[in-house]
View (cartoon, rainbow, N blue to C red):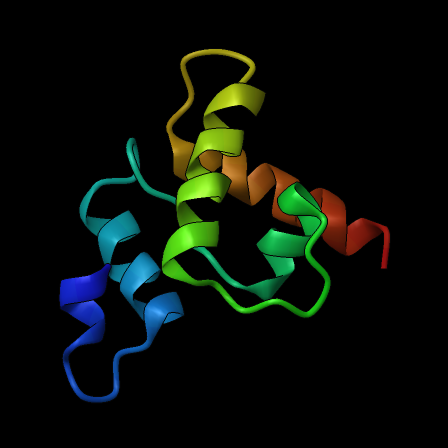
Length: 83
């Protein structure tokens, strides 16, 4: 994430998208919405430290052998329903 975000115009959130599409088993898209849904962080952008926490929490919440992208997407969709 740190390396990708060093590219001009690529922030942390975009870096998580690139990493996720490269390896959805190990990575998930990180943004302020999923931070709120999973970590309870309201209006908090993705950072290096909270992204690590997010991935750890998604691994804990994984009900089976799903990739992290699938788990993240499910929590994001549930979050949208509550808005």
